[in-house]
Image 1 (cartoon, rainbow, N blue to C red):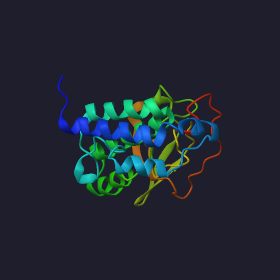
Image 2: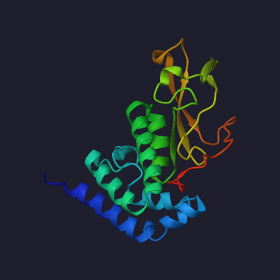
Image 3: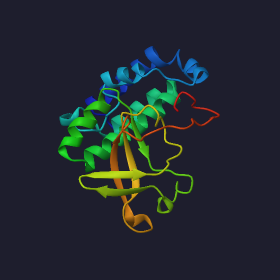
Length: 203
């Protein structure tokens, strides 16, 4: 298979950044259980935080193959950084596919610059089976009030925006809806960080 010029460019950018920024620091990230947030700004500056998101919303619009190549290069240097990069790319793609034009413009652009996205689906009783979800969302005039607890949400404590799943109607998977929640929204709190065996730089 012949790679396109844009795919090769993204791969090369990811490789250079991984070797120059991540390679010698990855062990320290694990020991300190922290990746400085400006690391993600650097990835964003190379177009790596929204690889497949359309250019109109700040992304690289480089497609799935370019994204896969970029992930391989970053993972080779620091797997914890790659976890956060992967989730943020996923959140941006969800917003670009299903969000309103205003949401795409605001949030995809923010993620492209290095803001982090979190995917808040899992709960204690609802991970691989979202139908068991207990978090609820109730409409209050023009607002929605979300009540519940999520668990195992990658870098949920550092996210600029979260895709939050909640039950809006009845039981089972068909009663679920998806919301965008700012990471600093009123009522959002983080109680504990998991004590992990690895990938400790990614909370």
